[in-house]
Every structure is written in structure tokens, then in C-alpha cells.
Amino acid sequence: MSGGRASAGDTAAPTGERAAPPPKPPEEPAVCGHCGDRFADDRLLALHRGRAHREALTDAEVEAYREARTEERDDVRLFRVKALGLLLLIYFGFIYVYAFVL
Amino acid sequence: MTRRRRLVVAAVGLLAAAVAPAAAHGAGLSGAADRSLSVPTWLFLTTGGGVIGASFLLASFVTDRSFIRRVHGWRRGGLRPARAAHWLGRAVGLGGLAAVLVAGLVGPREATRNAAVLTVWVGWWSGYTMTTYLVGNSWPAVDPWRTLAAPLPSLDVDYPDRLDAWPSVAALLGLVWLEVVSPVADRPRFLAGVVAAYGVVTLAGAVVFGADVWFRRVDPVARLFRYFGRMAPLHYDDGIRLRLPGVGLDEPRLVTSRAEVAFVVAVLWVTTFDGLVATPLWRDAAVTVVEAGVPPGLLYPAALVAGYAAVCGVYALAVRYSKRAARTYLPADVLARRFAPPLLAIAAGYHLAHFLGYFLELAPALATAAIAPLSPPEPVALVLPGWFGGIELAGVLLGHLLAIWVAHAAAYDVFPGKLQAVRSQYGITVAMVCYTMASLWIVSQPYAVPPYVT
Ligand SMILES: [Zn+2]
Image (cartoon, rainbow over all chains, first blue to last red; front, side, top):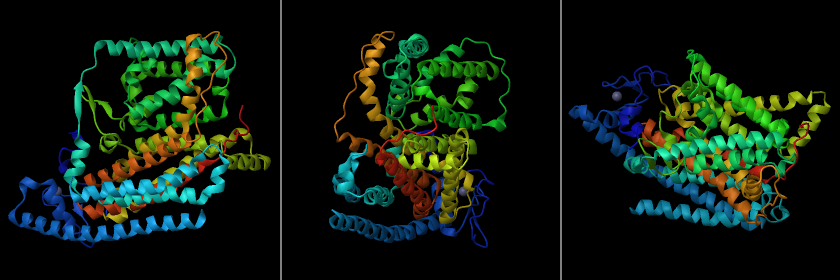
């Protein structure tokens, strides 16, 4: 295994590295109590804690992580449907254009 | 294999099968007239862009973090190279350098028969460079300047940190400018002079700053091959190990500063520039500009730098958009560093498209010239079959596909949210689609001799 991806925590840059708010930031960033990283919402924070601080989580944080994963799963499913639709659109779009041009 | 993954694999195959015949049609590349009859250029380019967009969508179906980690963490081997391999590498490097200098100075004056020209352009810049990204970076073992610098004393002057990788960026742009405007590929004497001058600067730098610092931080060729080597399957990590192609590009420690990002973007840009100046469009534009009163000597450096600035600007824009779409508190600089290495795969694909045919056509000439450097027989050139253009085209597309995948994996490593990671790639994917179309357009253009060069 390569050094860089031994654990998700490796990429969690030290505090301050994550201090640049995105355009249209939330009023209050969600701040990680373990490392001080900031996130745009609580769900990203919960996911971050679950990946980066798995061993140090409180029961409430574990529960938040589980919930965030479930929500994410639903969103990913919806995204896949859309992506598949777009793929089919591209695919048949090209078939149509090729049939028309050639 | 899970059902989902099988679906992904099947979909990739399906798309490839659908697009391949069309692409093969359109791949007359070096000016085959049948392309213009069968597939119009706009459709050929849109298909290329569509393949990139579609592969981004396909990559986004892979949302299993542990699968990505397994793919990227897969390693085999750990073979320690024998002592003899070091000596062999050095001997090959020094022998090649000696051959270039001798044949360049006293060999025949026709470029196609001269061993120096053929060694540098066919053997080294085409063939050897391909091995750095297709096999592994052996340059540290071969580099003759490094071998020559090793026994020299060093003044160990502190390398100014604020210079970072900027000298190698400037040197890379400078070398490409020289390659385009000077007779470095036509006049053996001139080539030998350039190689010698490069060596003098390199050895002087190695003496002043120490060989290790020079080759790690300044030397543009060492840096280029090191970066290309990151996408190669073989790499050195306490022994020679095997990994999947491209996976080394998503390691965070590969690019660690703004100057190194600039170097990666420069690699991408110079491979494009090299092709761009050989298109009829450039020819017409250059003639127009020079006739309007711009000195020809200014034309190439100005276009080189302006184009570079434009590509940097597009990348910065894509990264800014990535930050916005991912709603991350990570500074744009961090994202720029993390998403730069995948661009090397695109540059490598473009290098392959540009030089594979050239290498194969001239390899016999190189072989005959190498056997008798001072009185070579008439050069023989291999004639490549028409379908070969399809392989070149595949190089461009494969480089982009690899880049899409590596960027996808890097985004998963950086961001806690899966959809956040996917969204972070929208801007970069759009930039890649545009870049593919531009690259394919250049590759599809007939060759036109660049004007105002000697
Ligand atoms: Zn944290």
C-alpha cells in the first residue's frame, strides 16, 4: 500500500489548511472537534469524522456517521440514475448523429 | 466481481465498441483524405469529447472507497536490481552521450543519416521517453550528466527555496522553444553544441548546489522523467515493484508546491505547442502576424508564453470551480496540487500519439546509424500501415481516460463526501473535454512546416 493512502486521516491537512471558505459559505462552518477541520455542513463533517477519526468517535458521532452514510447512499443512488440517463443520452445521441451524417 | 462492477465493465466495453469503428474511420490522422469524406472533423472532435465526458460519468459509478483503495494500493514484487544494472545504466548513458558528441561533430551532415540526431530525437526523446511512462523511470540510473557530476566536488551553496521548481519550468519552456525554432533536429553540429552546453550548465549547477539538489530541484529533464515515471507500472520503492499504470499519479507527495503545479501544466502545454506550430492554422496566423510588423524572432517565445499563461489560467479556473462545486474549506492551492498529476497522463498520451509513429518509422535508420556512426549506409525508413493512425488516436484517448480515473480516485481521497468528490471534478472534466478536442484537432491536421524557423 502506498504511503499516501494508508488512511483517510493522511489527507486531512492540519488546521489552517482548511480555513479557506468556499464561495457562498454557510453562516457557521461545521468544525471537527478532533482536528479542527471545517466543513460546509454537518453531513460532510459526520462523514469526515467517520473516515478520519474512526477510533476516537463518541457514540453520538458514530450514530451521526451511520446516518450520514445512509443519506449519502440514497443520494448516490439518485445520482447514478441521472448519470445513466445522461450516458444513454450521449450514446444514442451519437448513434443518431452518426446515422444522420454517414 | 459484483453485479455493479460487471455493469461498469460492460458499459465501458459497449461504449468503446460503439465509438471505435467511428474513431477508426476518423483516424486517418496524417492527412488521409478519406476522413474528410466519411466523418466530418467536427463530429470526430465531438466524439472524442463525448468519450471523455462519458468516461467521467462511468468513473462516477465507482463509489466504493475500499475498491478504489485496493486498486491503487495493489503492488507486486520488490526485486532489488543487481549492482551490474547500475553499471549497465551508466555505461549506456555515457556511451550514448559520447556517441552523440562524436557523431554530432564529425559524423555525416544529413540529419537522417547522422547518429547524433537519430540518437537524440528517435532513440532518446521519442523512444526512451516512452519507456519512462510506459515502463518506469530509469533516468536517474542512465542520466550521463548525473554520472559525470557524481565524482565532482560540491560548493554546497544553499539553493534558494523561493526559486522552488520555477527554474525547471523556465528551462522546460526554453528547451521547447529551442527545439521549435532552431535547427537542433537538422544540423548535427548544432545539436552537439546544444548537448554540450546543456552539460556544462548542468555540471556547473551540480557543483554549485550539489548534484542531489540540482537533479532533484532544477534539472528539467530529470524532473520531467520523474513525473512521467509516476504513471509507469514499475517503480522503485525499496526494490523494483509493479503497480497498475497511473495509480502513482494520485499520491499527495508528488506535487507539493505551486511551482510544481506550474511544471506539470508546462509539460502538458509544451506537448501541445509542439504539435500546434506544425498545423496550417499556425502557419497562416504566424504569417499574418509577422506581415503586420511583429518581428519573427518574437513570435514563437510570445506564443509559447501566452499559450502557457492561457493554459495555466484555464487550470486555475477549473480548480476554482472545483472548490466552489465541492463547497470545501480546502484552499484552491491544495486542490490544484492534488489534481495536477493526472494531467501528466494526458501529456504522456499526447507524447505517444506524437512520437510513436515517428519512432517506429525511423528506428531502422537509428539502428543502421548506430552500427556505423561515421559512415552509415543509406537510411531505411519503415512505412507504417494506414490503421496505425488509430493507435496514435488511442494514445490520446487512453491518456485522458487514465487522467479521469486518477482524478476521480484523488477526489475520493481528498473529500469526505462521495457526491462532493464527483462534483469537484465537473470543472476539471469540462476542461479536459475541451483539451481533448483541441488535441485531436491538432493530431488530425496535416503537417505544415512551421514558418520563420531555421
Ligand atoms: Zn477531523
